[in-house]
Each structure stands twice: as C-alpha cells, then as structure tokens.
Amino acid sequence: MNLLPLIVVFPMFVAIIFNYLNGKDKLIRPMTLIMAILLLALPFIGSYGIYNFGAHGIENGLISGISYLYTPVKQLIITVIMLIGSLVLITGLGEKKSSGLFVALMLMGLASVSAVVMADDLFNIYVFYEIAAIAQTGLVIASGTEKAYRSAFRYLILGNFAGSILLLGVSMLLAATGTLNITDMHNFLLNNPATPTIYGGLLMLIIGLCYGSGLPPFHTVKADIYARAKPHVAAMLQTYSKFVLVALLLVIFKLFGGLSYFASAHGVLIGLSVLGMVFGVVMALLQTDYKKLLAYHAISQGGYVAAGIALGTPLGIVAGIFHAINHVIYKSALFLGAHIVERRKEGNLNKLGGLLPVIPATAFMVLCAKLAISGVPPFNGFQSKLLLAEAAMNVNMPELAIIMILVSIGTFVSMMKAFYLIYLKPCSQEQLEEYKKAKPSKYAVFSLAVLTFLCILLGIFPNLATDIIYPFANEIGRVWTL
Image (cartoon, rainbow, N blue to C red):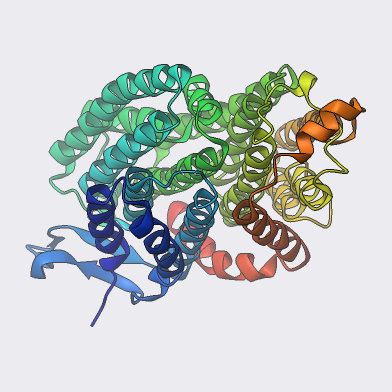
C-alpha cells in the first residue's frame, strides 16, 4: 500500500486539530513536540513512482486526474523541508506562549509546499501554491506587530494578482494542449507548433514563479515579509520560497525545455536570477537592521539557485538544487541565531555588541553559518557555489561565474560586519549585565546546533546530496536537450 498522500494529508488534518486547540497550552506543547518528530518520518512512507488519485490513470492516451511523481530527489527535498519545519516547531516551544494557530499554519505550509514539489499536474500545483501563500501570510500576521500586518497585507494583495495570473497561465496551456498533466503537456508542445496561447501561458508561469520565489520584480515584498516575521518563522518562510522556486523552475523546463522558442525565456530567467543576486547583496550591505540584512541575503541566494537550474545543464541542475538545500540550512541557522539575539530586545546592529562572552556557543555556530553563506570552505555553501561557478563556465558564461564570485565577496563583507557589530564590538558593563539576564532558549540552541552540524557535514561530504541529485539531473537534462 502506497502511503504517499499522507505526506500532504496528515499535516493538513493535524493542522485542523491544532487550530481547534488554540489557547490550550498544556495540550499544544507536547503535541507540537510529537508532531515535530513525526514530520521527520513522513518523507519515507511513500513509494517511488507515479501515484494517481481516485483510481484515475490513463484515459484516451492521457493521464487523467491528480497525480504525484515521487523520486529520490523529491524525497531528499521534502526531507529537508520537514527537517526545517521540525526544528522551527521545536524552537517555537521556547516562546512564552504556545499558539495552536501558529502550528496549524506551519503544517499547512509544509503540506502545501510538499504537494507543489510532488505534483505532476499544473492545477494541483496552483491550488497548493495558493495555500502556501495564505499560510505564509498568516505566519507573518502571527508576529503581532503593525509593520507585520502591513507587510502581510501587501503580500496578500500582490498574491491575489500573481495567483490569478498563474491560474490564467494554467488555463491557457490547458486550452492549447487539452491536458493538465505536465508530462502529457510537454509531449503535446514537443509535437505541435507554438501558438500565442502557449506563449501567454509560458509568460504567466514565469510571473507566478517570480512571486512565489521572490525573484524580481517581487523581491522587495518577499524580503519585507522575511524581515517582519519573527526570526524563527522567517527561517520557515524562506524554506517554503526556495523549494517553490525549485519546483516551479523544474516544471517550466520540463514543459518547454528543448523547444526552439524557449531560448528567449531561458535568457530572461537567467537575467532575473542575476538581478536577484546583485540586488539582494547590495541591499544587504546597506542595512542596519539585522533581520532585513538576512532577508535581502535570502533574495540574493535565491538568485544563485535560479541561475543554476536556469542554465539547463545536468551540472547546473545539480548545483541549483544542491544550493537550495544548502541555503535553507545555513539561512535557517542564521535566522535562528537572530531569534536568540532578538531576545535581547534589539535588532539594530548599531545598538548591539559584546555578545560573544554572553553566548559563545551561539556565536560560534552563527559564525559557521555566516562562513557557509559566504562560500568559505569547508562549509556546504562553498561546495554548491563551486558547482554553480563550474556549471556557468561549462556553458561558456564566465561573466555569470564572475558575478557569483563578486556577490559572494559582498556577502562575506556584510556577514562579517554584522558578526562584529553583534558579537565583537565593545559594549558597556551595564549593557553586558543586561544581556546576561536574557537566557538563550535551549530549544533554539538545539535547533541551531543541528543546522550547524549539517553545514559542516555537507561541506565535507557533499556527495551525500549530490549522488542523489545527479541521476535525476542527467535524465532531465537529456530530455530538455532532445
């Protein structure tokens, strides 16, 4: 019996239970811990291959109904999603008041992004894309500040337009091909001439991709919700975005890869990736608010992921997916570090300082994450950025590799500046004594330690991930070049 649907159904069902339990702390805390453990098992309960819902299958030569496609790569991605979700739930146990609504929104997001990753039909992707956007908006609102409300409202308003545009693109492709299944749709596009409807559908998918992932022109609104959410929540939000980016880019390439008229769109995707990289790091260098600095770096690193996959080569696909995995690990570590720092009631870098003797273990782990995002060996970010630069050189795009290196230098500068201002800058004895009164949450420190370990592990043994991704990338790359 294939239990694959439970990866989506189980978190959604438990989310309803947590919503009804909101306010009952004695029940929510133990149940949250149990759920955090169960999430880690979900990626391993399904079997590889195609799963068709409702006894649907092949009808008139086309795949009918909702279908999921589960592969080792998708299992790896969902494992990382569930791991980050588990650690964020555990970190949330350190909050003074447990919220069933917070856990419910978290689980809705985890289920919906997992569905986007697994779905093999466009309409199912759209449905869960919208649920993920709603869950993210709710998590930002849960921060409870006026600025968070405004950011969430702007994100939701733009989401109404972007979601409608994505649905219009799905409708246009359905009208042109007569199917919603991605594999069948690609076969139709491969054997039939392009029409204005198909061009329009492609454009709408790219707009939906940009909104869901935070690529330009939606980069500022995405960075804003990261900065306004609670830091440990922002860790989850950026995880959702990165894997929506991976899933939708793979869908676009699976549909249109290898087709002559896709060349222009291919160039647009690489251009958007470069804009995201450069804009994100430039804005990060200008920030004095630590969460905003991290938020803009999340945008910049998303540009790396998009650039790798957009190259369309097997090595580029491996590098892009591997960097997405690495990114959500070290970026989540950085946001959890910010969560610990925020307990000192300060987010302004100019008002911080002297935290190294107060939280030395946290400082060390945050430093590891900062070196990882900067692409310094032996951490995981170095391995994936090296693959990205190599992939760019292999397709005769040295300028892209140079941009990646320059952005990494900018990342290193801003990260080391922030580390100095938070942990090394001298502060008064009175301020130091005040810092010591706020003890770091043991739950946050535990989660940070797990993520730091993974930064080092994947930096020393990158093949733990790349060996799983390479067969998938070789197969997809071969299809795209037919």
